[in-house]
Figure: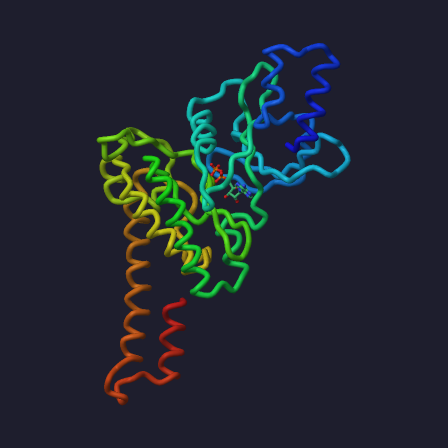
Length: 301
Ligand code: ADP
Ligand code: MG
């Protein structure tokens, strides 16, 4: 909210003669009022939450700002602990490659129901990449930005646990930010992993082997997920080549897991082989464009 908004709120409070300690949180710049939020459109949904674009327009004249509002899919009266944690974590983060917290919106009774963050107009990498011709240099730049954001997160001793293209948001053609801290956990000083027992549906295709086997999540398991994310970026999140977003449990895990690994492995092996052939010291051993065309056709199938 701008100074003008704050001033307006303040005047409102004074006029009503409610200038008391209780009324003070109302002018907290992080508190958004539901009545000023105008719904624009649905932005996306994951397993737990849904995100909607709103115009926050206290002046009610269309001059407000666009914000992304995340709420739980199931809005019962009860607010789960995990949800409050997600809000607190995002609030504590401040980095150019992490989506910015703006505030929250409380319902009557003071329960925190909605998380308000900056709106990233181009959506997630999963929506952005398949539609555009993003070259390798740009892909690598995005990869580096993801690493910068993750490095910062790790210095704060958080493991993200859900790093994937669907959770990387695009500000513009040159800037991406990490979002969705719904599964993020804090690793206390001196400890090396967070142990999850009996978890419901999880993004298993992004999980490292020790997460699947023993439920151990560490800074290095985020690195594994980054590997899968990098694969997604380099294949432009093409649905055909991507691991399924749907979160399967147990039985099917091993099957899909090995499928994904094989897929990634062969993809890289094949590309590497082609390069090596092109760079053969013996000109006669280099492939022809005809055979290369065929090779790429095969890989892309
Ligand atoms: P969940 O915890 O349910 O997975 P996310 O935080 O990942 O929820 O958000 C779901 C989807 O909503 C994202 O994949 C993305 O497409 C969209 N989205 C989330 N945050 C923003 C934002 N700040 N700006 C634009 N789109 C967003
Ligand atoms: Mg998500």
